[in-house]
Image 1 (cartoon, one colour):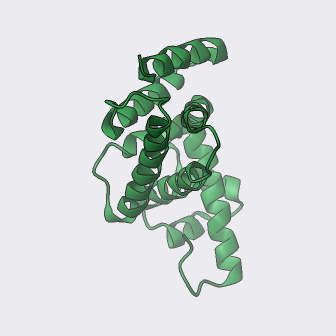
Image 2 (image 1 turned 90 degrees about the vertical axis):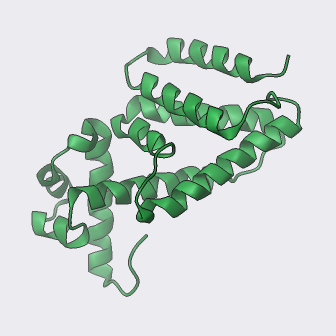
Amino acid sequence: MTPPGMRADARRNRERVLEAAEEVFGAQGATASTEEIARRAGVGIGTVFRHFPTKEALYEAIVVRRLSRVVAEARVESADPGAAFEEFFTRLVVEAATKKAFADTMAVLSLDVKSSVRAIREEALRVIGTLLERAQEAGQIRADVELPEVMVLLAGACLAAEHNQGPALRERTLAILFDGLRPR
């Protein structure tokens, strides 16, 4: 979310910093250097800190940006609610396999976070809950499964995906997970 009234050049620089930070955090995790982020964004370190006074503020902005995309994608309705739930879950796990910080981002959904992230976290949980409810109403996911359980499974699957399990093992693991979620 860009602050209101920001000049166009400052807005562009902020976006470049966020894009670079997402790449660097994605490759290196939360220990990434702000100097590397500035270099990749093509700006000075002062520009990074002018927009994001601390590394934590920058990481929070990345979490908000990432969760905002997750929420937007989860809102898309499908004719097959079970498939929509599984496809969305799978997409998150596949992304976690390629972006080191993404599993950390998904883990944030299970944590108490700062107020700057709280609103998008709550919205993400509502939207994922809606996907779950639709799949349950269609009889494609067990009725006794609740959102906290899905979030633990999702966070665990994302963390596991970070450890280079490879596409074939990830596919089999997710098939077992989804089988366990289906009604008997």
